[in-house]
Image 1 (cartoon, rainbow, N blue to C red):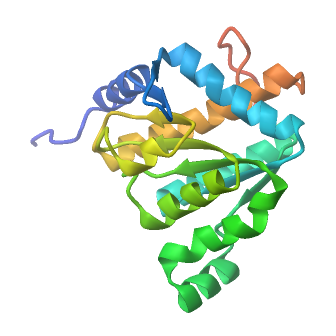
Image 2: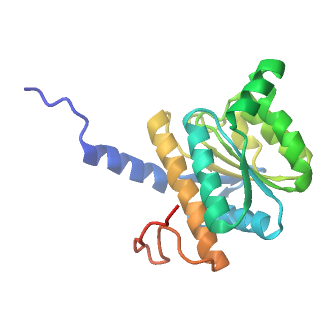
Image 3: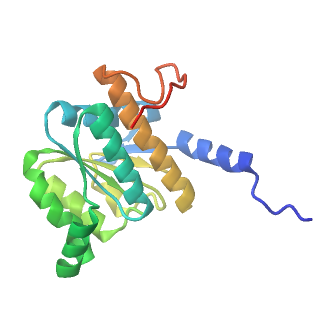
Length: 212
């Protein structure tokens, strides 16, 4: 019988290599070393949390699931005022009445006066509704953090104050990397704020999972 199953080790090593190859840039295109850039992203989350502002999250499909999971951890573990724009009744109402391209932007305009930041997650970095939300957040003076993949010059990557880019065109790998990054951001913020431990300790030792 032919063994045509993708070896698990190969898949896991590819994911690890992509995370190691993470590219972090700011809105001027300046590149940061991974540790420096990821720490900058964590400081954005902490600043929004301490300032009492909003941490809004948007994404489509798998990215919407990542955004919802991150919102859960930001609220329960970090203590941030986090909100995700994927509530089905409101999202479908706005999409039906005003078009899906406008659904996130309209919610952003409702919440943006509170200040804070937007976390915009998109594998392609080219979804129009995500782009409009990011532009609106910047219009209101919010900090924008993006997570993207696929093309290195994707338009969303140009809209973030800090941009986390995964150099892959594979949806599965990009989404998995974004999920890992979302856990890193929340766990690192928890540790920095002295709110206890997340899923890791400083030295990388695995902790018992949080109860939710």
